[in-house]
Image 1 (cartoon, one colour):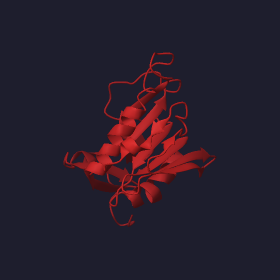
Image 2 (tube, helix red, strand yellow):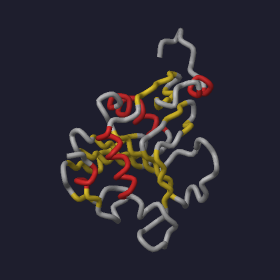
Image 3 (cartoon, rainbow, N blue to C red):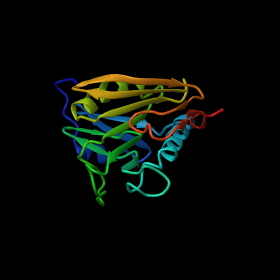
Length: 187
């Protein structure tokens, strides 16, 4: 950000149209259009596929133990990010409170990249997630039909696995369930 420019505030973010996704990264207000259908489809189906984790531990139908949210607003230090999906282990966050945003970093983030957001997700948001100790990050590209799984080691992202096309995968941190990636993509 240009040092002469004023740092964006939460009030600036609240003035943005509901038709846009607004984030504050390194003091800069960034807006993105609502996602196109390939992006939206991948996000929804990934959330559905992870539903066995989004329940109490020991519940029927899956391993449980997570809260998984669609487009949560995260207040991480001075930054305000809105990932496509994020998950918290219930052992770290036992309750979901009735609030508009969360200040506790998630354990897992999924960014579904698009031509307009790929650079932001990779260059600007990934270091913030590392700084905040998010332990796993997925980058999903619905146009290339790829999944990149990252694990945080210290302050560095390490590629845990990469997948593409119509593979069935066991991806960290949700390796207990097989995910059919062919469901994620539009024909």
